[in-house]
Image 1: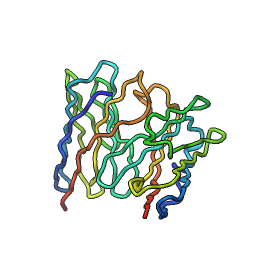
Image 2: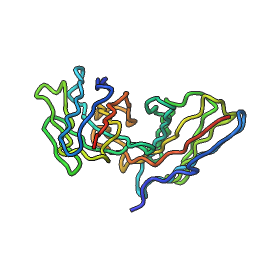
Image 3: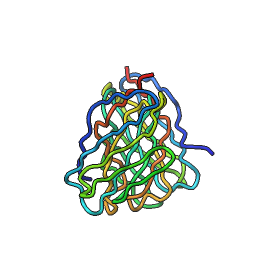
Image 4: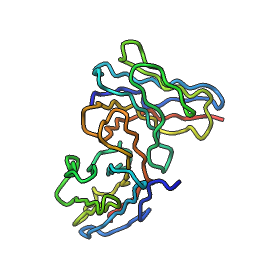
Length: 117
Length: 111
């Protein structure tokens, strides 16, 4: 079956430009997460959507970062006025339920590699 | 979520068993132990999870110490495809739902 898909797979942009990264979660999954992984670094949580609840934005590093999830499905992560330190792989994950963190399994997409020149 | 400690790297020979350790001495009673792995140039993938009892699935086994302060992921027969970074993560049943990744263990498999 179809897994989590992300587009584009690679994005090169110039410093100061805005970028949009897209995530298509697994059909029926109510929870959606964004993470990023900088070169040689671990994975860092950015934002979490669960159903119609207000998103958990506690991981967003600055107000240049925002995300939305339309119709409870597709999500877009937007980075405004990109900086070189934004260069990273941005990973999206989805899970069936979300609530009850103990047993919830997250399924990750292949990521979008963002390079800011 | 409580902190975990893993070795930075480990080596194994192909077709031999691999035991990947994880220490989590501050684990609480509601923390589940999850393992994910990340193959090169891919997103992480779920491997296994448990609470108190040992667990087996098609990918691996999870052995949990009686005091739950440590656990071991067991790959019964390593293949070259198992070369990845393995992450041991504690998840509180009642807390937020994001995964908190540490440094993980980079497993290298030699032919």
